[in-house]
Image 1 (cartoon, helix red, strand yellow):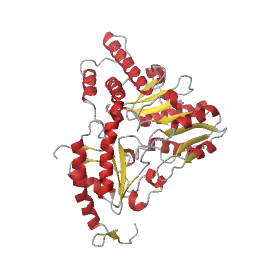
Image 2: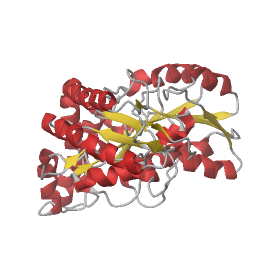
Image 3: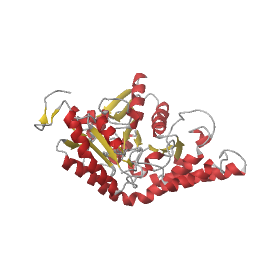
Image 4: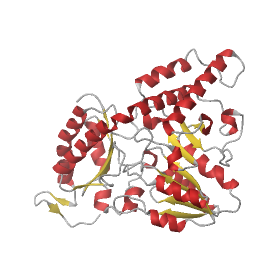
Length: 396
């Protein structure tokens, strides 16, 4: 197959052609500064206001003023957590999970060095959150709880609605990282009882470099950056008009396409079942029935995931071995380690991510080339005896 098959979490979320069409005028003739007094800029400001409404509708927000545009999910996460801490008096306790995105985990590590007490909630072998442990950990010193809606590597969905109800009763602020879930499953911030929720545009076919943070009306928060008046002072800096308008259009299209998510899940299941049937030494990473519909993470035992990716790349298939934000390390993913996935499987784990642009023939092609790749790697693996079809006993 000559065309590239995008089964990578970032690559599959290519910019929707309709989004690109909406954006282009703002990179050409509609280049006015939306904060200016002249008409060219004023018209752009109206388009940004429209995009704010579109994003608010995707999230079920009460009002569009609850949406603050940022550059990405990482910035939104940092703004949410760092922004509320100074408003919480002497409270020095933060609760999160062991499988959060590096945007949250690395911030928490920094805050830990600054004197905050961090509780990392564990997950089980299927990647499901220990909600009882979370409830036990909440106390009078807890300033904020930050939990993802869906895991970025396994797609496992966390019970954020139950968590939100519990924290609301306790009077504890709740931030949700919904980057992996937005546009894939319905989101209603009112039902989730969250105070803040982060999203990133490129996860639902908007351009990269644009994100947003939902901030519930009345939430006491200070800006991460200091400068001009843009975004009501919450996010200073000249607005990325093209990115914001593109994100607004993407939000509109994502809301309409949610009814098609069962089609994506059908393709995902076809890929997943095909892999598990073909390879007895392969297992699913993550709860089978509590995932976003587009994500499949599987572990091939006794071979390295990076080698699989290189061979897939030769076949014009783009996949991933985990979060793009933690690539560059040969260590198994922190998510899989927290789940207790055996090292022999974690080291050979691959994540396939589908989108509404994924076609059946692409899934069929992927399944047709995988046996050659996996068998070739098993033949040269020091951990697998290809002749006798069993592990050699050599330890990783």
